Every structure is written in C-alpha cells, then in structure tokens.
Length: 386
Ligand SMILES: Cc1cc2nc3c(=O)[nH]c(=O)nc-3n(C[C@H](O)[C@H](O)[C@H](O)COP(=O)(O)OP(=O)(O)OC[C@H]3O[C@@H](n4cnc5c(N)ncnc54)[C@H](O)[C@@H]3O)c2cc1C
Image (tube, rainbow, N blue to C red; front, side, top):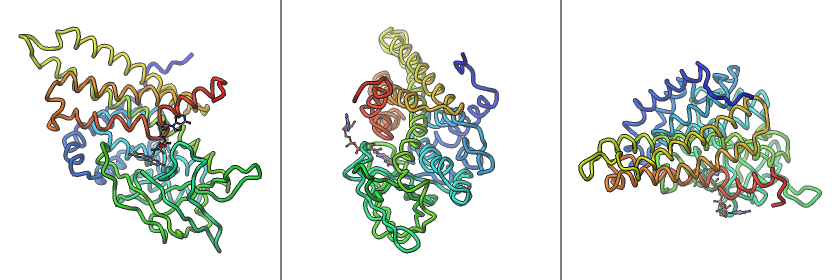
C-alpha cells in the first residue's frame, strides 16, 4: 500500500521554488494588495513563467505535466502566505483550464488552454446565480440555438477571475432545454470575455480574498459561436461535477496552506512574546493548542495528498476530494482563530497578517461546495439516502 509518505525529489524541488517565490515576491506585498483590493496580475504572469499556471496540464498544452499532487503542493505554499493569489491560481487551473482539458476539442484546447497554462490569461467558471448555488439543477441562465451559435441570457453571481486584465473566458453553465424525464438539460459554454452581450459587473466588496477578483456577470443576448459548446449538449451537470471534484482538491490544499501559515506565525509569536516573566510558549495552554493544530494539519495534508494522488492514478475522487475539503476548510477557520488568540491584541491589528488569514479562511467552507453539501456527497458514497 502506498500512503504517499514522501514527495518525490521533483515535487520537493517545486515546493522549495514556490515557497521561495511566495516568501520573496508575494508575502511582502500581500497586505497592500489586500488593502487596495488589487489582483496582482504581474505576479500571476511571473507564476506563469515558473510553470505554476499550467502545472498539472500536459506539456503539449503549455503545461508542466506535473500532476494534481504537485499542483496541490504549489497551492498549499501560495496559501501559506496569501489566499488571494492562491485562489486566483487555483480557480484558473481547476475551474478555468481543467474542464477544457477534460471535455474540450483539440481546437478549444489550443485556443483557451495553452495561453492559460502559460499564465498569459486567466480562466473562470460560472455556475452560481443570484438565486442558486448549491443546487446546480436550479440554473435559470438560458442558452438557445440562434443561427450559427447560441444566445445566452441570465446572471451569474460571485464569479472568480472574470474581470481582471488577464481574464479571457468564462466557462458558463446554462439551461438548454428539458430532459424527457422533466429534469433540466444543462450545457456548458466557453464565453469569451469580449463576446457581445457579456458584461462583468463591479467587483464585490468582500469579507476576505480582497485581492481576488469576484463579480456578478450579466449575459444579455450574449452571442457565442457554435464552437463555444464545451462537451456535448446536455453534459452540463457532468462537466460541473467533474470540475468540482478537482477544484475541491485545490481548495482543500488552500485550507492546509492557510492553516500552516497560521501555525508558523503563532509558533514564532509564542516563542518571543513574554507574559508573567516567560515566553507564552512555556504555558501548556498555548503549546498544547499549537501541538494539536500541527497534528490536525498533518491529517488534513494526508487527506489532500491522498485525493490528489488518487486523481493522478486516474481514480474517481468524489468522496476523497469532498473529505479533504471538508476537513481542511473547517481546520483553516479553526487555525485562524487559534493564531489570533495566541497573538492576543496584536492578532486583531491589521499590521499583523493574522486578521487577513482570519478573514480569508471562512470562504473555504463555502465555495466549491459548502461543508453541508460535502457531507451530503460523503453520505451518498456511504449508501445513505440523502
Ligand atoms: C468569494 C467567492 C468566490 C466564488 N467563486 C465562484 C466561482 O468562481 N464560480 C461559481 O460558480 N461560484 C463561485 N462562488 C459561489 C459559491 O460556490 C457558492 O456561494 C456556494 O456554492 C454556495 O452556494 P449559495 O451561496 O447559493 O448558498 P446556498 O446554496 O443558498 O446555501 C445556503 C446554505 O444552505 C445550505 N444548504 C443548501 N442546500 C442544502 C442541503 N441540501 N442540505 C443541507 N444544507 C443545505 C448550505 O450549506 C448553506 O449553508 C463564489 C463565492 C464566493 C463568496
């Protein structure tokens, strides 16, 4: 049995490279990007030069062919210092690129995946609407055949990566009809950001992930060519679910990285901050909490690596990805809380990175499947009728 105890030499080298980049080129600016809500596209381009924006994709499509585990390792290192950069990368790769790799035609891969993998463009995936998130079958956005292509009408909500200067396309789930059994027929379309009738709205004012671009998107008689259809007509739910399986591994890796960042800051603070004549690390109330946190992070990392390694082995990972995301996202919220508590008053001041970690953690339990939906997914794999 291979428990993936050790990363390979290549994966370790990648980890070291991304850590050095994150500490040198991201950490010093993360607070300012957060304050000014700036998505750092020049940094994304540099990550592209390092190969990170195409890490899991085959070399023939501009990627490094390094696989999902390597991708998870890289995302963890980015989230250890800045969740906004981590989600920008994770969303572009998992939500933007992966469905095109899995379901696209050769022409679609050359047109959309290759520049994305090189970090020249960012991709987005739009499923959520103002009236629907968890229940994709409730999509109201429509697409109907019109002449040479399709006309899309509707609104998508809370979409990542759709409005930056690098944003190139938004893969969009839309209702194309009704199945014989009465269920909605969903299909997926690659909508170029310059498609007529496509209008990204102003960015949201969010609790966290300030430097990640999130917008509502309007489609008003938005015209796309027939080659915009991704996969077959009616394959929308399948594309959506497959995309989320991979995406959840990325979000789970973000949870591990954020928790590790919180632990690293808390350990350093506990060793230097003195109270009652000695470093607070000497108090077991503090050191036991941090020992417990380290243990839980190792457990979360094991879940993430396992899901990623299984995906790389070509196995279905619906259950494993859901478990990894459920555990590590809830852990991230806990870790941020612990780090703030250990920092005392300084942990509440924006001069320290802890408030940013605290604000960035919560969304991990919501995006790409809320904790409740993940429990539903896991319960179904157990044969429970939910
Ligand atoms: C910053 C940010 C970025 C995002 N990026 C994207 C993106 O790029 N693309 C995209 O498509 N979406 C994106 N989203 C949307 C996100 O995926 C949804 O918010 C999420 O899936 C939850 O959907 P909802 O908000 O409609 O909540 P709802 O589905 O309305 O759920 C509300 C509550 O009800 C619970 N609930 C719902 N159904 C059940 C059930 N059957 N059993 C038990 N509990 C249930 C949920 O767990 C939750 O607690 C983003 C959101 C945010 C905030």
